[in-house]
Length: 414
Image (cartoon, rainbow, N blue to C red):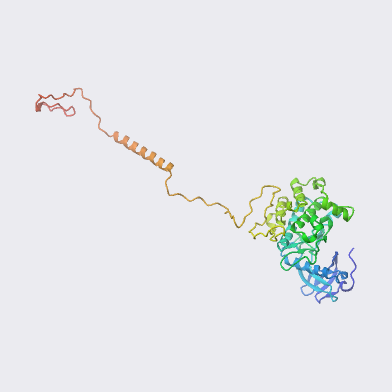
């Protein structure tokens, strides 16, 4: 049941002369979300207002304001847009966000009805789009869970995932030091969805902590149960740090083995063996979704992890392939150093005559000479055989007694 509103949150109250409060949408650990109407635009919006008892805690107020800044930096369609910020008369801060119709994905576990892997893959690819863009800006969410994945219904009837609540995000971009708000020994987040390294030190996590949390969401949405769930907070923490989750196919036999391999890779306690980015994870999930790849654009993370030297920005495809393929061998990733043309140009023709061509020309020439010789012999005058032997002249023979030429017989009378 929604909490009763009092004071400035009563229905009909107008805040800052432009937002008329309607009713409560939800309540979290840091704030209360109410539906309101922007009077100037006649547009429904959502106001997230810091809980009154927390407004005297400077670090909480700073986190609330940082959530607004973090969400406003992400331009993709899968983060709830922050439209404005303000404060009540007593100084309590609030932020104005786009109004969403729908439900978050935590209902899957409450209802005990797991979702088909293909549908889960579609939802989590959209979440990876938002998380990948956040990582590119140096923002680590640190609280990814089904309750923060909102399935919003659009006017067209289509649905899309919106990532909510960047309240405990780690901002690692320029001018956003996080050390002052997160101590090295502070554990922040929801225990069931926290990575082992986040449970030990929230300040020292990198983007692979969010990859772990997405893996927990994949597991839960496909099985309607979590991979780590103890009787107490201590039991849950012990399972996350030391335990091994049961294979999700034990509870969802219809799940493809390769899909199970993706989930278990996300949940590897050695973060160097997880997917290196949200883009890599989305590429691995893509074969399992029925939606075309053109609908999903996951930016490659430009954020350099502290444990590795910074890498130069590279031209990346819409979806970079996973570093260790799960389904099939991945195509090579383009880089600035090696750019291959789509079609290789034909090799240049050589001007020199090859030996094979020369031999062919010689054969043709010999054949022509042979034919010409044969035609010439067919036109020769045949020799007439002579029955009379040719007499050889003797030394005593006179000039008049020369041998007769058989081709020219003597004329009569000689």
